[in-house]
Length: 272
Ligand SMILES: [Zn+2]
Image 1 (cartoon, rainbow, N blue to C red):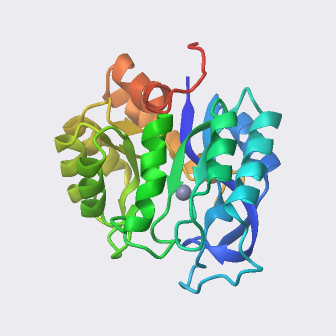
Image 2 (image 1 turned 45 degrees about the vertical axis):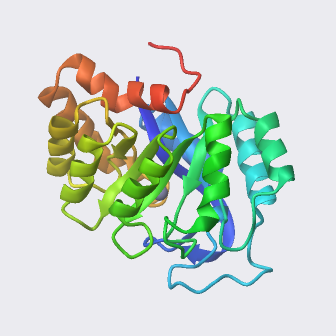
């Protein structure tokens, strides 16, 4: 059982993130999952980005609305029900949480397993009040929150710590465990906070092993950012999978490589 808890698709008219991506075809993600024998994936649509790589706010006509982004990702899940579930990528800078969006989420709750929050690409501190209505909605619908982390004044580790104490009912998965850091602050926070988890995406392999040892094998999730570097994004994680299997017990490795995602995002995957 191998579950990638962190993947992306989507098509927007501006470049986002450090990889400066704007077009990630869903069919390429499915090809990649099959090629690398990933059983299941949690996917979010980059259409949720509000600012481009260089922190320019995308013009109104370049923005893909929350509703459109949500409908696109739901369509992708419906076409690949045995392979993926979606995160709803929120747009708190340019939009509000409307009743219409909440109704779409409620009606498709079985296809959505959480929220994607990217404070950097929303150009907001994660502690900003504009996130609160979305997090309150996540509480009422039992959605897990996947949050980008990077100490850039927006997606800081300590902001996640604060929000996890304000919303103790929510589970927060800190992807990248503090991108471009030594991951020490993230590891300490995950270790000391019951509702905060971390993922392996773009984290040095030695730090992932350290995180599993210090935080416990039930706190770290396998995730790769496929397919932001193309169909073979996952390739560099194959040695990591082997390293986790040889370093930890069968049960611990199974947790990191899939069971944690199943449990934390309540995925409809049967064990094999
Ligand atoms: Zn990502």
